[in-house]
Image 1 (cartoon, rainbow, N blue to C red):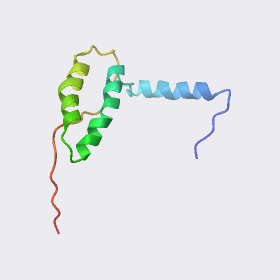
Image 2: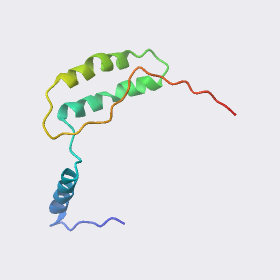
Image 3: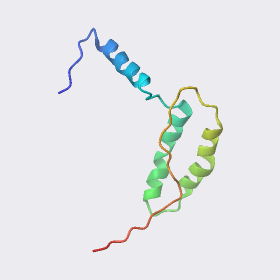
Length: 94
């Protein structure tokens, strides 16, 4: 069971956990990558549906290149890469 921090120590405990993350190499993402990650939601939903991949096309050919061309803040991490415009056909076998 998680311990409930005392009101006076809550901020200190949160900052200690954040400091431990940074010291172990878990860095926050770049702000532009956060925006790009949020903009992935619509193309990912479109990818799952049997409709033309218009949003996927725009995201992979325009949004991602623009974000990659922006300067990055130092000491930031990145989200995992996602491969667009690729589908897999699975066959049912007994």
